[in-house]
Length: 145
Image 1 (cartoon, rainbow, N blue to C red):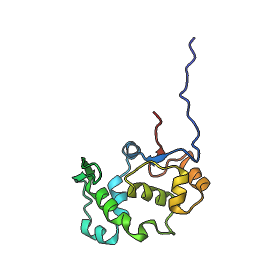
Image 2: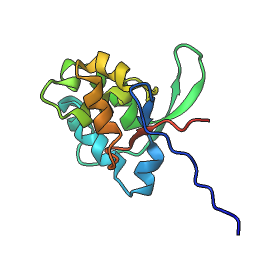
Image 3: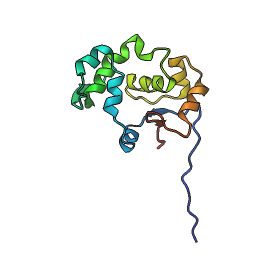
Image 4: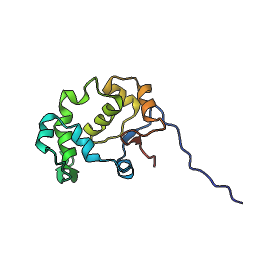
C-alpha cells in the first residue's frame, strides 16, 4: 500500500513574508467592505454614509502606467486615509496595525522584521501574532512557489 505524503509546511520565521490573503476573506464569509468602511477616516466615512460601495475603479499605477481595477473603498483608504497620522495610531491593536500597513503599502509582502521597523514593535511579537493557529484579518504567509 502506497504511503500518502503530506505537503511540507514550514514554520514561519522572522524572514517569512506575509500579506493580506483576500481569498481568506471570501472563503470565511467575512464582509470585507464593512471592515474597510470602519477604518475610513471620519471625512470619508461621512462621504460613503451608510451605503458601502462595492464599485470598481480604474487606477493607473504612477510608476508603470498600467491600468488596474481597484475597489473604490480600498482606493480611498490607500490614497487618503492611510496617509493620515492617526491611521497607525499607537493605541491601535497590533493585528489591526499590521493589517493597515499592508493596506497602505498596496499589500506588498513584508516580513515580521520589516513590519517591526515600520511599527516600532518587536519582530518576535509580530511573528507570534502572525504565525499562531488562528488567522487574523486574512494575514497569512505568502505562498512559496
